[in-house]
Image (cartoon, rainbow, N blue to C red):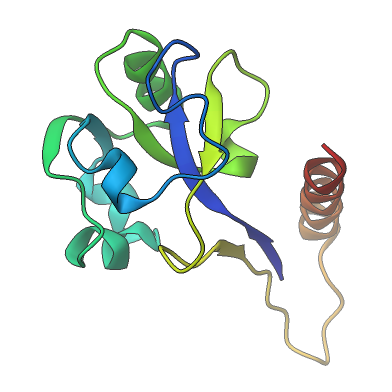
Length: 137
């Protein structure tokens, strides 16, 4: 199992971009771009968005990470995204304050009496490498 912390993605010139971590009070009133319903069904964000840490000003929804990033880049709003999903772009990622949300988890499950198929083993290795790079960044 691999985990990646959740944070806020913002343009470099956004007021929250200089924060070392971000709390609900820091992001609550800013315009937000949220994942669409299909994305949320397969995400741990649903729990965050149903709880007391949900943003108040949702201006758009995006079904794809690239679209979400493009809307943030265009200045439409800030967005929730894992650190792994936020790498390799010109936006700023700020981790959520501890206790705000659980990290995202990626798990590959295989029955004990089966070998991991090559395609899943390669994917697992890629994810592990990405997470190692993330921890040293």
